[in-house]
Picture 1 (cartoon, rainbow, N blue to C red):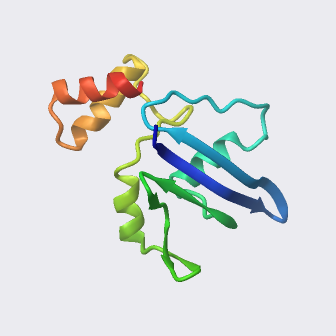
Picture 2: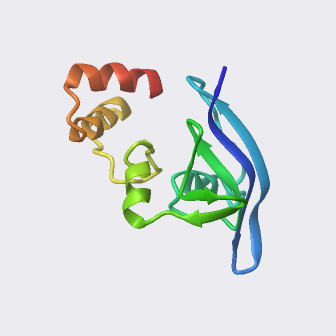
Length: 133
């Protein structure tokens, strides 16, 4: 099974403190993956890096083979423009804890509503969301 998400030597530091230290991870397409650990262990930071909400201090993240947040020129990585990053983010669906979900709706209903914003009809959105929720 091909990797949908591939992290290679992902490193992230805040104020000189290393939060993610050369993390390598492959998540196969269609799989369900759990990131588990104690508070402060870097779970949310890892997810924020995957969506390029946090810039990496080292390494690369690829989704579907495409480097997220950067383009490669020779051996060097250059950060994408804001519009290119927004284009990538529009293809990545994430729901964060306490992120203003509608409390009267289920997780699936919240995801379907978000997909409908992308002009998908309810049946398409429900079918696609049921696979990922």
